[in-house]
Length: 215
Image (cartoon, rainbow, N blue to C red; front, side, top):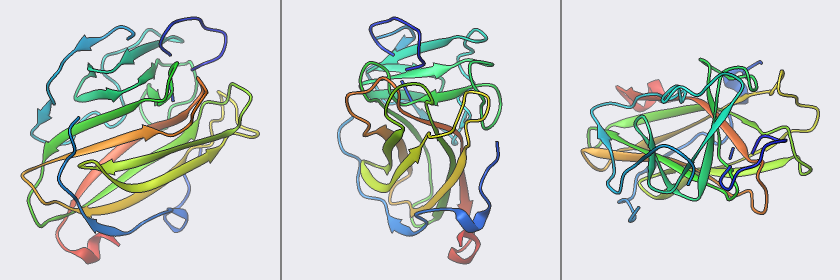
């Protein structure tokens, strides 16, 4: 949660080069496991025809503000599947791409997910920008990226020396092979007992023509 704010549900510039991408690898996606603030409430998974809004631009949040979303609420094609997150508006702190970003911790750690169309047997590459909420006492922010409920990549980010103006985003990457006509990508915070979590932005999903183009 950004500092100096009060609410009941609050969350979690230079990108590193490809040589610093961490945790890359290929695995087969497993079947999906069963799935308060302000926002749209939905009890069903939202499936879109393609991956969309990886920079968390929808809905637009007022400049220099944030908006909290809890379990069951949606943000464009994304859905909060557990806990709560904060959608950070333009100018509150530096975004990796576009105007907005997502803090994966509100009053509790949160998880966001998006379901999109995939081709079974095809390899996909996921890249995303990672930082951490620079406010708060503990600098280490942790979380994981999941595909169809399976943990594909653990991540951590140290906010020591980082500021709202210079978040220090790094790029992370992993690949997966789709099992089904739709796939669910999720990001979850594992930063407990904190309202200041990992920050994700600029999420991209690319379909690969072969394994070689994903390496």
